[in-house]
Length: 121
Image (cartoon, rainbow, N blue to C red; front, side, top):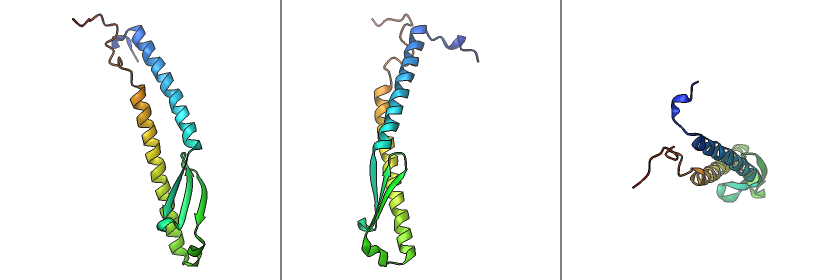
């Protein structure tokens, strides 16, 4: 691949590389933060609660004792609904964190206008 025709000066390229490295570090921090964050998915008005971390790992499940009197299919359906609720919450949390990071990480001179020799008058 030939990059000679891109017309990007060395300083701009270095700035872009630095920004990419900073974004990678922030992404690793977000992944660690998500691993340590827990959400609670609920179903059946709170009769089923699924605790899941931000990496989509189910950590705990709580069933209201009165639920155990129900038939097996009802319990299974509520567990699935609780897992799906927790999954949606983790997805939203992840999206929010990534959106926040991307808003902070986009440099103002990413267009390559820096160092082109043009000056505003």
